[in-house]
Length: 143
Image (tube, rainbow, N blue to C red; front, side):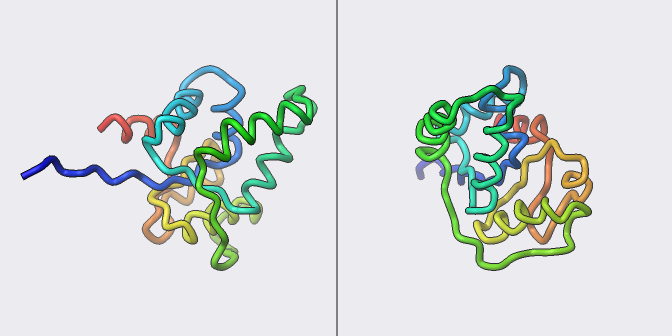
């Protein structure tokens, strides 16, 4: 028989993880190459996409509007699957603002939420979705 086909992991990357992968060097930056190689399926929904664009515009990153548009057009849209939320989720995370990542993961049937946020990481698991750190996800991709 043929080789077993490996199923691609479906993943929600929280905003801080995406921004770190796009703008900084280090462990998290490895994710940029991995999503460009289609080694996993990253998800965004309207709420998480809106937050990403807002965060990229923070003055501390010194990005122009043109640079942000280029990042979105070249680094995000070709590789991320944009989904519609089936429903809002509340009460999962201490920070209500983090519930959008859980809602995105549920709606997109994600396997993981990858986060650097201590409050979100503290949840560990929601339904079938594991909430893990970047280094744990990178290790998983190597197996």
